[in-house]
Image (cartoon, rainbow, N blue to C red; front, side, top):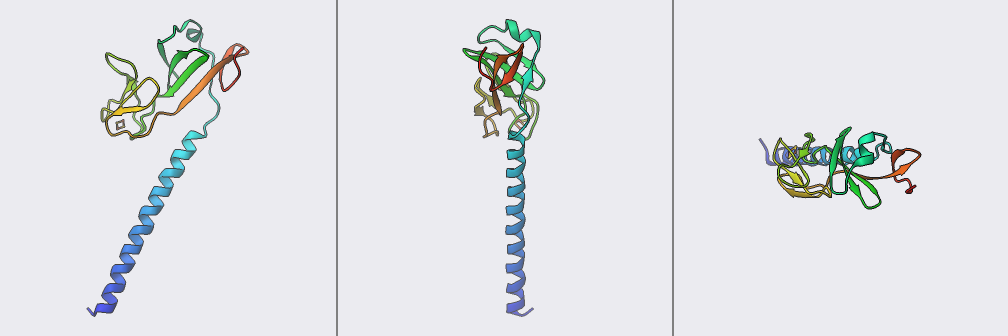
Length: 137
Ligand code: FES
């Protein structure tokens, strides 16, 4: 094969690899952004009324903890590859059964392959329900 056609094929292949990689990266970023724009969270589980400060409950895919001004809800979806998190054994936070990522009580990654913090929502009491972002009352 002559040199010029060979180099043209090599550069074409590299160009396709770059475009393919960039497309995959962009789609992953769009997917992550889409997950963050979910509908506002609203809960009315009666167990939330008696939740003590520092205690946590698992409700509807969320790990809920009482805060001074309401509730903190952490998503139970691992930011590595999406496995469902469980309360960490012997301590605060959440642990992933798939690849052993661990998150603290604020949703920050502590160890394992996950690098992104968990999705989090702040809930306030309003009209008999716990709703995202509503003023206390
Ligand atoms: Fe959770 Fe991999 S999916 S650590």
